[in-house]
Length: 398
Image (cartoon, rainbow, N blue to C red):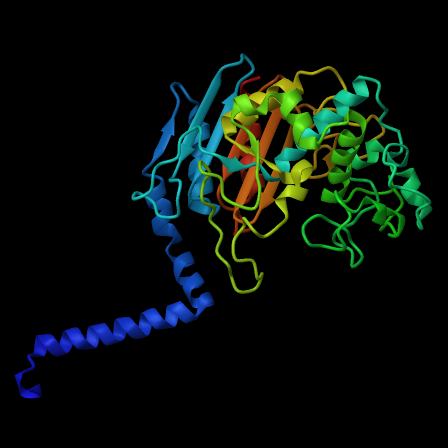
């Protein structure tokens, strides 16, 4: 029988054996599979850039940003929207909805992305609206608004104010060994265990320093609920008309019209996918919203045009270097200008596993929103590069 085998048949058998061995290796070796998939990114990026569409008369720099994000920042699918100082809306989209380019449906201006921490803009704006309604002030201690805070072990908890939470100065340092946060760091406190504020020790005296805190913004969400008598979700629905804008809250599953994110388990995090990584129902005031770049841009424009204090406001007592792109945090956004002679703009970033978001507003009413299904992996290509592109182009239009 073996004498009848032809050389071609032997070759086929060898190929099948090798294919089985290689396939088995990648099937059982998650890290090898991850490295193989990551090595294909340049090909996937080039294919993704075959689908770049823009609205009529869109400025070229919007397309430039999408190319930067796709080629160099690990984001094969992106949306960018821009409302200029005259109120004209432009938008561009690149890439495909699912992980496999070309064979997947291309994204559109309506494709849903998770907003991540850009959600904090709605939380801050709602708090500032309640202040203007006379419900409380920037210097009201949250202990007066949240009945769960009673005789805390650390008396400094009684001193935490609304102003300090807005500015990330509430005393919580998530990087400390005793840090508290919303993403599996430290014991759970907000939104369902607020009484634990009575048992913790703050990482620093409120107001003494700035330390980015998701917990602080969750507490602001709890204040909104306590003062309004509505759930945070209902308050946002009623006051921002988000349903009409196509914006909705996320949960621990992918929504039907949502983008697929460029996240691969590396074998180090233990997180299989971004949808079940966190309790998103608890993150509503911190990172709970999703929608398109166009919808976010239109809503942020309305927020930025409100009476002071608004999401662009800087605290009059703030001692920071506004020419440092990361140093000057206001009531909702970071303020920045290149020099005293240059215009100022404000930005808010967001990041979750496999996605990033960015909103920029200048003092003349222009708004830019960028949503991406990936995060930068190279130090030389980061959100700072994109911020500089946006800043320089907005500056030229003033």
